[in-house]
Image (cartoon, rainbow, N blue to C red; front, side, top):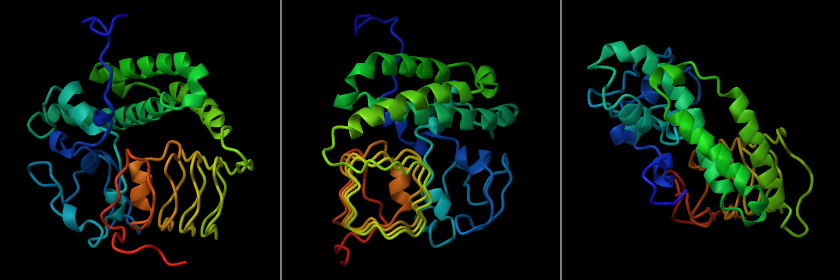
Length: 286
């Protein structure tokens, strides 16, 4: 289909897969359940607005989330689902001025969030040179996912995305394997879902490693080489990435980076930004 064909389906741009809170109705602050813990200072039921949500749908303590006990909010990423639901699915009608939309909108949001997360990974997979043989299949599931994001609200609320996620996950796994295989002398041990909580991995050569879904909570990864490591779903909460090299890491998200600790010497993929809470003024100590 020609690129200028007006009947061609719209494609979500990479920028639209990043949260734009200014165009969202505070959906993550309402639709999600919060449980009092190290991540959240309060308990909150799904569908109940967070007490810190202002009338303009902005967070009243955004600049103080970490100090106020809401670290979990700083590491959450909707992948642009919030503005998509707010401005496209519901055409700019918010749940306060149109309360009849509230219940359904809060059901649609987590579904859209899953779909946008898949779009984020599929978009990256299509940039991996070694996965070129999969490009046709990747484009096919990308188009299907795009179509699902544009369903009417009622259909989205009832959508079971599990089967679609499985199909996408299988393709992403193959794409990651092909790309990791290009690393010479790579770490070939599978650490998929591994318990690496608090692990001492300082200076480890993890190039091309499979760390999909690994628990790296509070792990010492100072100076580790994670280039071309596959990191879908890896839990980096409080992991120390000071001086680590994550440039070229596969399927790393901003939320994962935000959950970790790092410094000015930590190398990140160009699409990600250094979190404000990282020590940006000095390298990590050896």
